[in-house]
Length: 138
Image 1 (cartoon, rainbow, N blue to C red):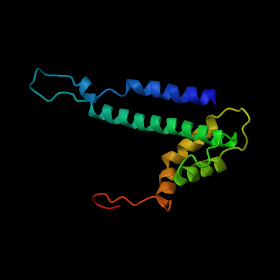
Image 2 (cartoon, one colour):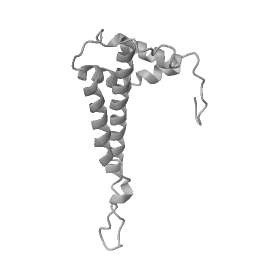
Image 3 (cartoon, rainbow, N blue to C red):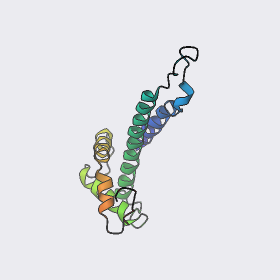
Image 4 (cartoon, rainbow, N blue to C red):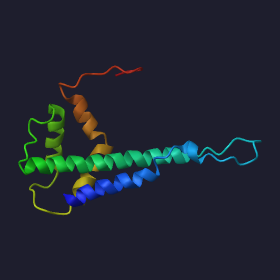
């Protein structure tokens, strides 16, 4: 699990470069006679990279929680029912056991599930999850 932790730390470190506001990169290109180059498309790409990185780190953290539970470190009862259900579903999709192995495929599996909206769907379907009204729908 040390390698998983180092992966998460590496992703966070890589995201530091793209976390600067796009306004820091605005450049005047024609002595005030035209609009400046705002680089908004690059900012949107950085936002996408940040979301992918956050999902990757979350996948590492979920894997760590699953492995902690398998090792008997008392995760049952420490978390809400929604998270317990999510961890159980993640555990069902991963190889059994706690033996040391490369965890890259486990992280990719969890990452793909998170990208598909799978965890959000599970949490939304949980009976104890209140429905929050938002403008234009639920």
